[in-house]
Image (cartoon, rainbow, N blue to C red; front, side):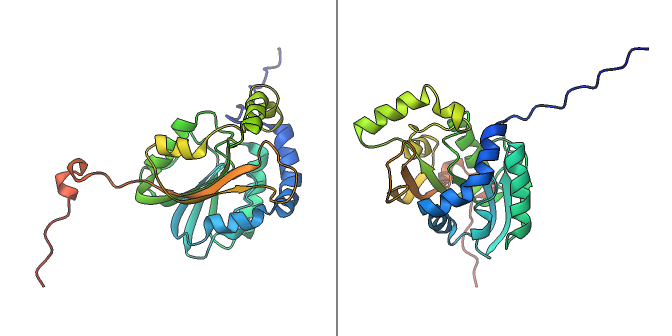
Length: 241
């Protein structure tokens, strides 16, 4: 009787085995040398309530969530990075639930979170508008989206280099990372209201890399206009005291 062939295990939606092993090994040291750790703390400062983090990688943000955060749901699609994130979650000072999933189809309910975090991840998602639409869906109205992303350079020369790299080797070498995307324009196009933000260069003192131009700040899911609020949910007159 011929042996039955076992079915192959399902392939992950995102699978970058070589890059992910490299990232897990070196990301912490690169963060320290490039000053990224301080930016991660700034990114998360003041957060509270339920937070969803997209593309959590190996969990480098987890140690910096403030105590006022009641829960972090960390979405990470890549298997090796997710395993490292689970280890980081055990050491975190707040509850962190690491969940498989992709940014374009978040496995969570609508309007379930007070804040969302994207940290060096919009460069690598396959469909940025769809991913941001999902983030807007899962945030409550008025909820914050904290972002720390690299993107298109202001200088024409470096921007040309970025476009050339994106069309050739860079995404293949660095887990589908693209250097010439425009985070601020993409957030605005997705319907988020930009709040305070600033540009920075990483590393601040060192060679200027295709991934050096960065932006850090906050955006918000706007409240719907009054005419779009169902009558049963519209605020009524102030009660008489």
